[in-house]
Amino acid sequence: MNTTSIEQFYQEINASIPKEIAQEIGHFNVFSYEELAKKLKEKPLMPYNKRTYYKISLITGRNTAEYADKVIEIAESALVFATPKVPYHWIPKDEHQKGYFCVFTEEFLARNKSGVVIDDLPIFQPGGLPIFQLSIEQRMEIEKIFLKMNKELSSEYAFKYDLLRNYVLEIIHYGQKLQPKSISNPAHNASNRITSLFVELLERQFPIESPLQRVQLRTANDFADRLAIHVNHLNKTLKENTSKTTSHIIAARITQEAKILLKQTDWNISEIAYSLGFEEIAHFSNFFKKQTSLAPNNFRSQAL
Image 1: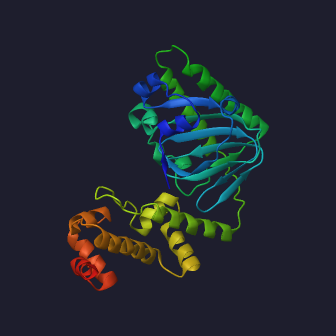
Image 2: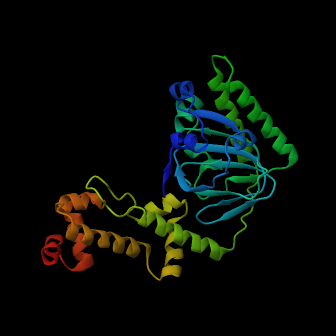
Image 3: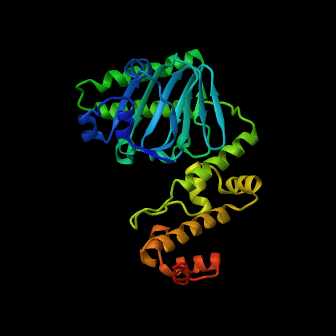
């Protein structure tokens, strides 16, 4: 799984980052889906990536949103909240996409500026349903807020960013009062998707090609957090689909990479231990011996 930064987002939409915004408030901007579509010859799918920015969308059109454990179909108008902590895959189903969206970094809604801790807000909690079906009246109400944001962004008002934060918070609170859109996918599809995404996350950490490269996801909790699901749900799903525990799958893959590094590189044991996510050589040695019945040095000498 890749991570999409705010800079990469602007590259994807073929636009430049407004320098004055980046310097003054971290980052905030508003876009029209229709105007953006005119700039792009093709409408690229949004891959299942982790993003480093927040996004709130008011969208009218047929779309599908895929999360680790659910798929949500959007037939008409919806309000969509996206957080860097919850990766998702967005698939447009037709060319008639209308509406607005804003993107902003965590610094834009920093507590000392907004009075809130953004990740404590219910709308951005992992495991929730961040997509809300809207009536025509609701869509028009939220559209007015986006239009005010768009207008204010180009104004000369000295306190415009404070006003923009208030507009964003107004949309957030509006969304938190709405009922979530129902989940459309059968349970077995969710189970297969969780398994597939887990394997993808695990494999994307390998191969280790430099002593400075390091495995970041090493426990069941690490993977569950990245997939925004409960660790018990992840454990149960993998056990049902693979007949193996989450810890067993992770340990086997780390052991496989450890063997490769011991055989094919001249890195010392400390470097290998670090690259595989171990804080101490002793921890790595104990892990490797438990998995293979050999100490790392002994395994390396036998492989030579």
